[in-house]
Image (cartoon, rainbow, N blue to C red; front, side):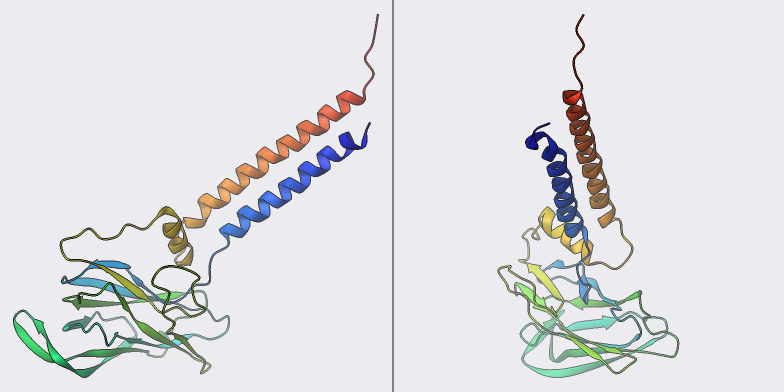
Length: 245
């Protein structure tokens, strides 16, 4: 058998390994971070949003979460939903010009919301917690960037305050939650399939986002394995002598 015939199955095996690495590497979940859900809304409207806080520590629990509302996008009406085991405090700041809500000008708006866990309610390793709020009327800006601070029981504080690039690009190491706002009366932007997959990978909620990719990887592995076995069988038949009468 020639060198070319001997190396064909080996090359196929190497191709199989490279393909699996590429697929499984894509399927690996991205690092979880504090996010806002939903991620899109309409300017001028009201909405219920939840700040999703995953615990990234292997040993410590999340005991406090602080969310800072953007100064360049004041919101007149902010209310919180009770979270069992957590207390909430709301801080305000002066605004000029006033923000109008239902025809009434407001000179103060919420600047910061702080949730603090009571004993036994902290977000443990491998868990996440959502903190719902109601906001409105939403300002006439393209997006709202909420800076968040996550405090752990060991004293470590993770600052999710880096503003992602507006035109896309590489995500920073500690991105702040971002709410995208569409003009009033216009259609909200629709995320592409790639963005939807990435968003699903970021969620630490046990969803099925990775299962489809893993099944695809398994199918690819089976197909390439069949190709390797078929090539090996073909090589054996070429080595066997052909009988003559």
